[in-house]
Amino acid sequence: MKKIEHIGIAVKNLEESNLLFEKLFGAPAYKQEEVASEGVKTSFFMNGPNKIELLEATNPESPIAKFLEKKGEGIHHIAFDVEDIISEIERLKSEGFTVLNETPKRGADNKLVTFLHPKGTNGVLIELCQEIK
Ligand SMILES: CC[C@@H](C(=O)O)C(=O)SCCNC(=O)CCNC(=O)[C@H](O)C(C)(C)COP(=O)(O)OP(=O)(O)OC[C@H]1O[C@@H](n2cnc3c(N)ncnc32)[C@H](O)[C@@H]1OP(=O)(O)O
Ligand SMILES: [Co+2]
Image 1 (cartoon, rainbow, N blue to C red):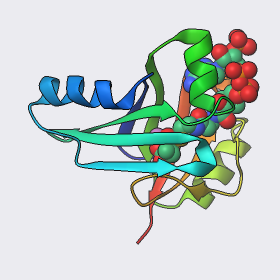
Image 2 (cartoon, helix red, strand yellow):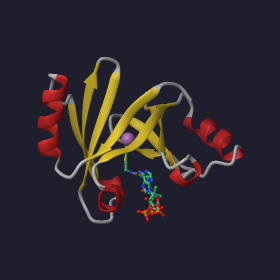
Image 3 (cartoon, helix red, strand yellow):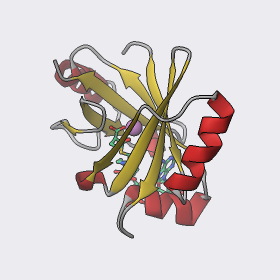
Image 4 (cartoon, rainbow, N blue to C red):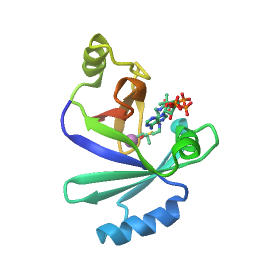
């Protein structure tokens, strides 16, 4: 597992949050993307070397809709860059972590992704991302 790839923030209204984060960073989102399989619309901001992913739910079954209902807006996950997601999944399983999808799926921003259940990681949802080359 390498550096933090992005921090995911759950928001109720992506357009309003886009304006807020644009003011915060002094630059607009560099990309917006819908990921239907996750039930989310996303936008991405860079601030120096740091990437922030804003996520709005697109349906009531979306993990973001459920999170907003239970916890409200805020940090939803921390994503880490990995070189080889398959071997990292095997390593983490052998260490006892609960990998939510053992076959990585297509995420946003040209990545293959999977998640570790927050119950096994001190309440923090961890995403693993491998860049698709
Ligand atoms: C855009 C694509 C991608 C990218 O490229 O970057 C993304 O980032 S997609 C982000 C959205 N997708 C996901 O979050 C997928 C992984 N998440 C899940 O599979 C589920 O959300 C979950 C973690 C398995 C929980 O689902 P479920 O059990 O159906 O929901 P509950 O609402 O009942 O929650 C159970 C339990 O877990 C706590 N929880 C849920 N989400 C989080 C979270 N993000 N961080 C910390 N804790 C979380 C929730 O509070 C419940 O706890 P208890 O109430 O104490 O039981
Ligand atoms: Co993410």
